[in-house]
Amino acid sequence: MRINLASSAEYLKIVVPAVTAVILFVVAVFGYFLPAYRESLMNGKKEMIQELVHTAWNIVAGFEQQERSGVMSRERAQHTALEQIRTLRYGTENKDYFWINDMRPYMIMHPYRSDLEGHDISDFSDSQGVLLFKNFVETVRQQNEGYVSYMWQGKDNPDHIVPKLSFVKGFAPWDWIIGTGIYLEDVEQEIALLTRRLLEVSLTILALVSLLSGLLVLQAVRAAGLRRKAENELREYQNQLENLVAERTANLKQTNDSLRSALADIKTLRGIVPICSFCKKIRDDKGYWNQLEKFVSEHSTAEFSHSICPKCLEERYPDTEETH
Image 1 (cartoon, rainbow, N blue to C red):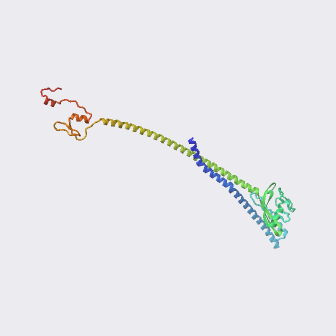
Image 2: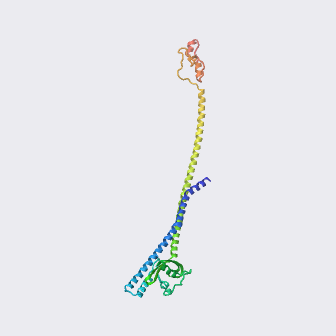
Image 3: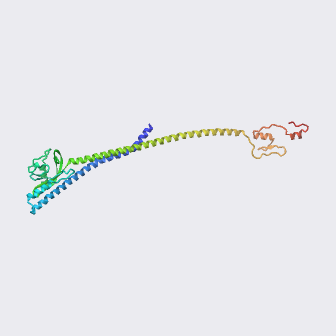
């Protein structure tokens, strides 16, 4: 149970910070970056169609200038301007276009809805009932230019109706309104593509972090296991050493006790022993003169057995034959 708890602690210590960082990254991306990117993308698209309309407006203004200077008649100048703008295309598929209606409103030119050209479009509404051309006219009357949202066919496909945001600008000399727009579906597709890529990147990062965290946890758990094993072996060795020291200490104590007991029984003669030069008596520590046998017996474990050496036997008992 201790190993499982230790492994879990090691795992959490490594994985939690890494997973928290990934979660914060995902929250920041999808909670802040994507909405900010969508807003920035929309603003960029809006600026783009505004600049494009201004460009087309300048083309029309150029032909109107030729009309005023007498180079062209109004009919020819308008026809030439319409045909030039009719052919203008842009976008990834080169299908985005410009149209022109007037302030009545009548359709003057539309590259994909030529059936509306020359007709009154004041009552023309989208699938949600929005009178879009009337809104164009109202926007130009109030601000001379601006943005209008509505539903319209997807480029050259009349069966595919999608949300569209257009920018319109009035050309007062000819009473025209020039416009172009972006399909919000395209913007959402770009956002969806970016979202999918960011999600894939986030999942990849999470997988890599999980893999690296797993490897780090595995190494940490192995290291912890080796550390615990080393600690157990060291503890076991220490116990063995302590037992050995205790055993040796007991043996030494027993030996010392035996030696101390033996020494207590041993009596030795040490230092200078005063002895009479004539009678050979020895003086003890108290000043008494003792026979040699008595002094040695008291100060050692030696014992005496009396006998007569051959010289003394001859001197004291001359009549006795030496016995061998």
